[in-house]
Length: 134
Image 1 (tube, rainbow, N blue to C red):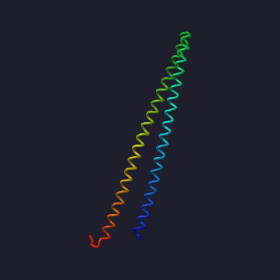
Image 2: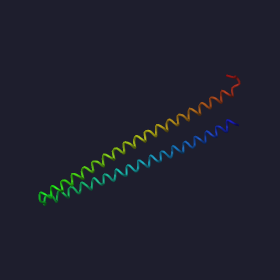
Image 3: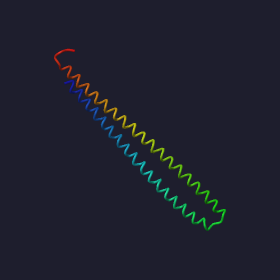
Image 4: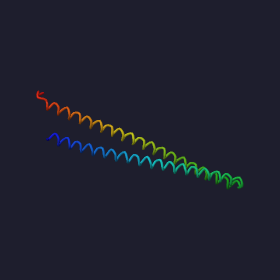
């Protein structure tokens, strides 16, 4: 009877663990989605910038030297900004990946622990049920 109770309790714990894991997974998925969205946005921005650059170039052909210089400066700045953004994004992605890996590892460990516990319990029960005393 007592054993049954214990087992039930363990089962409950297991269930709770499962729920937690599921939640974690969901969170991860969400994060990934967000990252993807961000990346998409960045790409769009890049495209826009490129277009603008082309337009500026076209305009430059008809401009005087001083204005051209200024525009050039602007473009350079824009480019720099874009590069920075990209770098940041990459970093973020890397971090996310690392986190994912860590989480996975943790989950695996948990599962292993659970299994071990279960097996041990079973063995103990068997031993106890045997007529010969160890």
